[in-house]
Image (cartoon, rainbow over all chains, first blue to last red; front, side, top):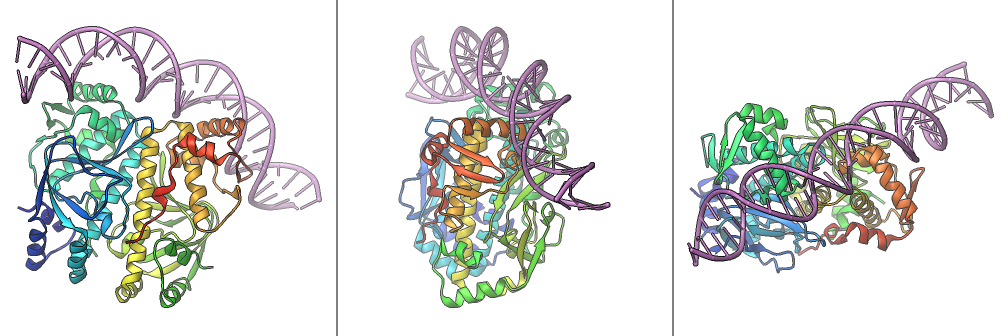
Length: 236
Length: 236
DNA sequence: CGGGGTGTTGAAGCCTGTCAACAATTGTGG
DNA sequence: CCACAATTGTTGACAGGCTTCAACACCCCG
């Protein structure tokens, strides 16, 4: 199944025509090696890149060399959807695993959406959910200690993958290093390690060999004060 | 001058017709006392509220009672623009000063924007700038210490007010308490106080009686590694 | 088999939170 | 206009969470 369609159908109902259009968007594909940037701050945003496979992260690097992720991108997510409306990009996107993206000319995407107001609205709604996730991250960094912060991120990632239909079980592939988690959470990899150990010792979850196992999902959600409401768009 | 028009004209060019429409949006006004919520998470989002005067903050409260701001809202900002596309709101907005808002029926706003694609795009671009601000806040909380964090927020607020044409000088009214700053920065009011003292002692800025004075703007920007690029939308 | 990346653990130090007391300012009612 | 209360700002002492630095184990891939 096309992940872009899956993602948009969470927030909107699409016609067969819309689905066909989205499928055609994904014809021109490109592979990106793990560790390489998919889009760059300085780059010319002529194209829009859509995640089809693998994991990526939106990030920015500070003058002192430290890095902060502002989003994890999963299949169906737009790497730089903004450029349909703005000529600027103020972030980078890096492939955290081997990634395949769909490449669409910015103008082609704009033209297509002009003919299909339903599609615009679907993209728009998906963007608003992304923004809600961003707000949740801010709250996470501002007001939760490292323990609850890690727990909250794990709950979010599990819920998002579950929404995409990428899993049903308590065990799933999480191809993130502890440094990646630290970059997302505003923590050092060392401290992420200590928190994961505690979560493991307490029997809430384990993360080994890139396999995450939720041993006690409800306790984990409670520790994180996780409320999944913000991940579900409610269409008018 | 109508602050909504000022705000949108930063990111788009408007026709006289558009401006007239926006002015008509602001006919139905409402006053909100300092400390009261303008919109509530649980509330029914039938209306869209637009800031005309005063300061407000988007926020969420955690189970333990702590509060995190996710945005400061100034004249021209939409309190809950999402509800034109989504039926849900996952945050509150509180008036930090006495506020006047314009109240528009959600359906009326949707109808108006359907006739005016230019207006939709203007709103959309403004939203994307707001999102860039949100990312900047996340980076601020994730990777800067309290000193640089406070400095960065001050730089941002100064730049935003400057963009709105609300000031030209190095001195301007900043009606936020130290607790407000703490809620935005993920710090305690006590520690904000200590940082402000240090910034004062070092001659970078003072904040007294709700008056902020930038004594050395370039040094302050340097301490914060502040780059104002993200505040300016670049239209296609 | 060897090497780079990743994970694990400990010790020490610093940044920020917590608690508390008091000062300054603002707001309110007489 | 004054008196008083409530909010906000200021400062100190102390505790704790997280970072830093370091060493080593593990694992995958060449």
